[in-house]
Amino acid sequence: MFTIPSYKHTNPTLCIPTSLQFILILILASPAYSQETIKTTVLVTATPTSPHPPSYTSLEVFEDTILSSSNLYRKDHNASDLVWNETLTQYAKAWAEGCKWKHSHGPYGENLAFGYQNASTAVFAWGNEYRLYDFKKPTGFSEETGHFTQLVWRATTDVGCAAIDCGYSNGTDDNEKRGDTGSYTRAQGWYVVCEYSPPGNVLGTSRSAGGEYGLFKVNVQPSSTYSGPYPTESGSPSGGTSGVDRMLVTGGWIWSWVGVLVLEVMS
Image 1 (spheres, rainbow, N blue to C red):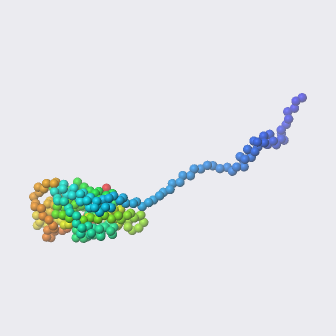
Image 2 (image 1 turned 135 degrees about the vertical axis):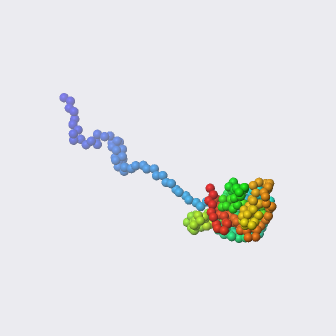
Image 3 (image 1 turned 90 degrees about the vertical axis):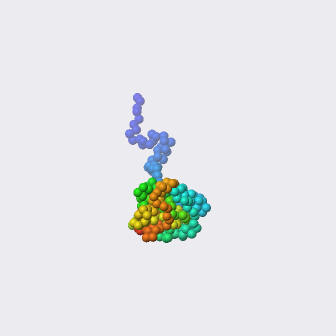
């Protein structure tokens, strides 16, 4: 009679081939683990650097750019071409080297700008204010248009400018903090300073021809052909008040001066 063997007391591992036993031992001996992909984001911060276009780095190109850009607007508003003045240039350079984002309060008209890619765009920031100027009224002096009116002021004959790379502060010192006016205390990037003589934005008096804004009628004209009621006259009349003799632009910031400093934030 055929008998089926009993495996009740048989060691189970003996039923497994030796080769399979070895593999099983390796699997059981290996520590359990899970695979994890770690993504690391490295945040690199760097202080921006200023571009170095020839209109800033070459004195000759800088002068030509300032004059051509300025005289483009002056031609459109019936004003003679400005000429370069080395005395004004040295004054502008001495002030720009300090990188102070404020007016020098000197004897000249003054336009200041920082943060623009080249010299022509700094001038265009001032000149394009003509869109806000009312030639019929006229607007006279205002913080929105005072930079344009200085630029095309007919009685102004000379200009001198300087451009200094002030670099960029990293936001951890007082140089980048803003004061009560909301302005930087130090220019950022290329700092352009232009001085004008005679200064523009001159306010008349009630006894002046055309009243307080009579000189604006004469010196800020709507087109290349003047047909206004007053003769052209230069300089500040007796008892007149100097208007925007200082102007600043950043990469979007502008200051104007007419007794007090006021701020315009450009878009």
